[in-house]
Image (cartoon, rainbow, N blue to C red; front, side):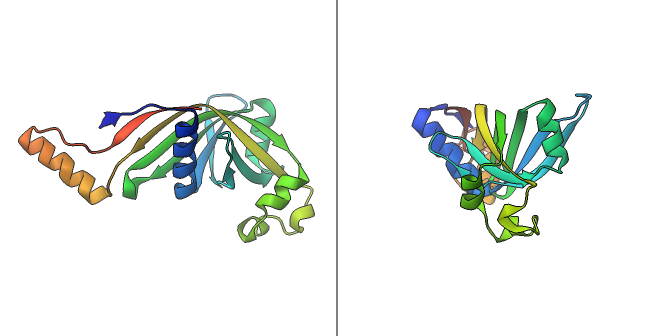
Amino acid sequence: MSTEHLNNEEAISKLKEMATKIDIGMLCTHTKDSKHVHAVPMSTQEVDDQGNLWFLFSSESETFRHLQEDSSICLLYSDPGNYSFLSIHADTEVSQEQGHIDKYWNKMVEGWFEKGKEDPRIRVMKVKPHEAHYWDTKSNKLITFMKVAVSGITGQKMDVGRSGDLNI
């Protein structure tokens, strides 16, 4: 696996590509006692041009309670079928900004909020990455597995993918 660190626009482009393609990330918050991590699946609403990720969630959730005490999170994306993985450490901002609620409202979100877009429990989360790392292959899982096997048998190094930091 080759190392390829990306900066600025290239890093944002890679972040956007992977988070959008995978869509569901495991959002990890810290519990009050800091001994445990609380993880929930979250659907990415957008990765903006600055590399911020946006989500809608409920003020009645454990995630919301945890963010009141510690706004730092870890967001993990995984697509094992394509050997694509993304790890993001970030700070968050939570709001009730109606413009973003309107922008990100969709049928899936509607299922969580029976009172519609005006539901007072809806919160907007802006995730602001300060550290990100990716692992990605240039081909699918089967081809990658075959390249690893050939490399192991022949000793010849084969390009099975790339990994690196995303410096946003």
